Length: 248
Image 1 (spheres, rainbow, N blue to C red):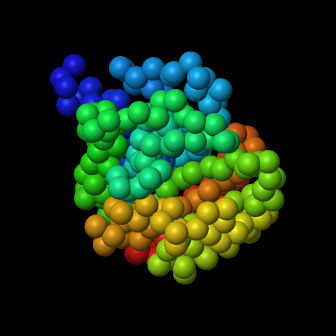
Image 2: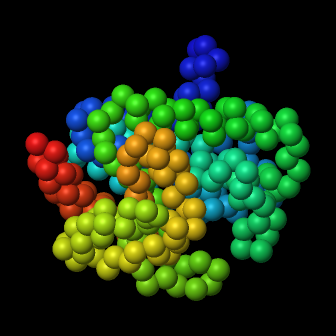
């Protein structure tokens, strides 16, 4: 395998879709995989299977929605602990230092060489794939799929779904209404706010290509249920059909 191909496989899973689909999907926290040569440090094994390592249920939802819509989807193939694709490279959260009050051993002593290795092997190829595929697509909307833990720092979250946005409030409201119609409790810019920079990936690429960006957050106890995902896919599939019809 050529080096460029190896880097791509390490970083990105691409689901090929129809160029005409109005949505292009991204899933920044799809996997908790550690590609070679990285290994889980023994002190960090407690993070395996948790929301600190990846977004539970998000990858399945992204693939299922891509199949329903015929949409192109880009999913990460590495844990957010190695480098967070939904953070600016200058962000203090690019490499997570603490989780639940405990230090993350993996990230306690990252030097310049290790930082560059992670960016070159993982973070940049993921974003380059989105750049390439969005340039080849007629999609007007970049929809990022994420999930969030039902309990954060000991506090339960009542929010079922969140629609995150920055400038695109009308689009976000349309997405909220589509999901509310099938019985979900949907909140705008909760449990995080897109106006606080937390739709970094979708917005970065949408703005660069003159498209619109919005993010869906699904509570993880719901995201892991196939029946719940089927309801989400049906609602989003109907919205996608409306958008395609409006385009003419």
